[in-house]
Length: 68
Image 1 (cartoon, rainbow, N blue to C red):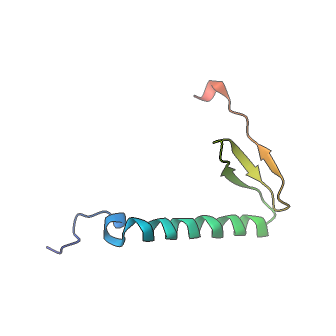
Image 2 (spheres, helix red, strand yellow):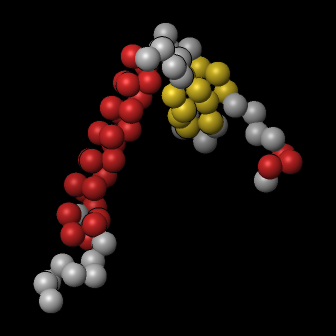
């Protein structure tokens, strides 16, 4: 039985490295959607969800109270 057996990926590679990899993946996905001319989703500092278009325009998504 290996020392890493049973550990999560984050435990094995470290939280800092996992966060770096996730941030890179999100950036690359946003760049790919921009290149395709499609909006990507984001959350601003106030926790509001938006769609951001390749031209930088943001369209905020209103929460539907019936979906809570």
